[in-house]
Image (cartoon, rainbow, N blue to C red; front, side):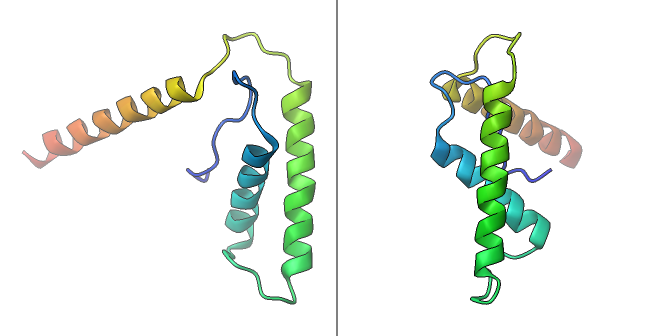
Length: 95
């Protein structure tokens, strides 16, 4: 999975349309292998982003949460903890 695509579900405050669109853009870039489409491909590229963003919004809205709400700060703390663990493993492996 592309590391730039983040979990969008079950957040407080709720995920914004801009966050959903950014994830759709990352997905289309990853799948197509294209960061910036040519002018001839721009319409199909943008259309795919729109469709994926709409489907993602429906998915996020339709799911039923059983877990506590996530916060962006909490997710950032988890990412930092994973980074520190990776760093420690790298250092331990180099000794």
